[in-house]
Image (tube, rainbow, N blue to C red):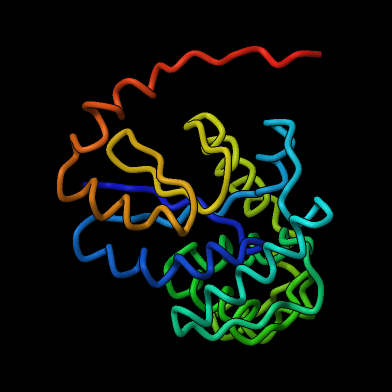
Length: 208
């Protein structure tokens, strides 16, 4: 079974889900797909949680609490939200393989380091075999691949990160990981009963 894991380095929830997705690779073939979360939000006319006062503060607290509960070392980067384009492009320049995904996430979210430009990503980039990080980030083919990834994600109905797309299903968020496990054990588990009813539940128009 083949799956795509859509993510953006700006998301701490993607960092928290990463080891769980890596663990799933023994059962399904998962391909990492770096995408621009900001472009996804714009496409759907939404704000990110870090752009809403109150929700931003709670989300940060929840992320830190969840990491502690799971025994995951997590330190926020110097600023958030941050421009993640450089990190995404570096990942693509390094081949978008799991070692690159993990190294960049750890640079940003385990070590709490900045990663918004070539200088801030030079160390991790060289560790991934990218000798000229600045050149890699400016490469038109790299930029084009990131755009293509994001457009493909939108075409696949992706509306948030992280999302695992597998077998025609989309599982959004780290907290949906147990749902993935249940679905893998029984792909029909969300098709019957109340799940079938709510799949076509009508929406009531809000008063204006």
